[in-house]
Length: 407
Ligand SMILES: [Cu+2]
Image (cartoon, rainbow, N blue to C red):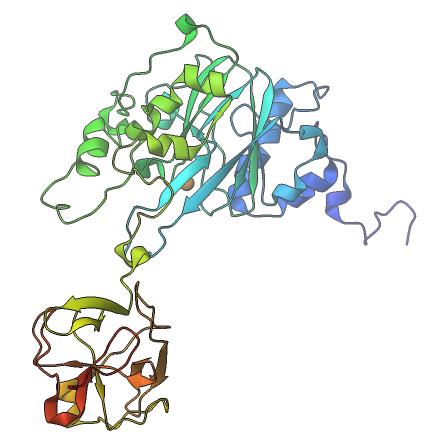
């Protein structure tokens, strides 16, 4: 083989690439990760190549596209972010029966940085972007004059996006996929005097020319998604909106400057609909009524009742302490074994030791003082003890679990 021929084992990627500011390893990594990211980061370098002489080590941070990586652990060292913001997806505790909407949010939701600072946005949940409100994006400008319509690509979980904030002023940002669900944040760049704080128009109508660039009007966001209506009258909650987030007092630019950083929780605290913030509202179940409690009966004094206050009975033909029941089938239709999920709990003044066992029919049955306990189907309300003494074998119980029998 002639010495002048190219080495066939040489990979094409070993050719020198004359793009400034990129470690070759990072560049190759990025070029290999798919269309969306290549669009973001690839255009980054192409764009910067035109404007940058290559001296600036932060030239990887394009003013339109920033710098994206699928792995936050692989952020090039020379980018050295000054701040970090998380992008979160917080589902409600029980998504099948949600007590609040899913919260898609930035953390913190408000941040004060200095001109030239680099902010790293790190994805804790999937499918987010970091995008500026800008006519170029179909919205009215909510970033300083001269700032381009910047945006990250859509990012994966664990990915990161870095952007350098140069121009002083107030930057309102949104996540593309979750914009209409109120995924917004505000970054204040610099120490702004009161008169330098812009008063952004409180709409999200975007450019009116052409009107098609108004995808989400104030009316749509405030009314159709949020206002109580016939469609959502049964809902216990409606989604957050950009208005609610960005007009929250805790995201006032001077508040952000005073505090440096404002957590999402504080923003939620400003929104009346979510007084519990990120916490799920307290369920009644958390102060659950005990399985067995003591109730005062007019005739018999203190007796054991269930969590609804209904009288409990023991069956004299059950073997005490054997964790088994001799009341089956028809008997169990009239004398209802008290069942429980998990362990039975005792109310105040209950002295009987409680236990639970599995019946032959597979149900659980609570035991008090060694006696399996039952409700009586012909008791209708708390205080009824219609089964007392029935057949000479059914007896109500004292707080210590001793049967109440005639002397
Ligand atoms: Cu998002």
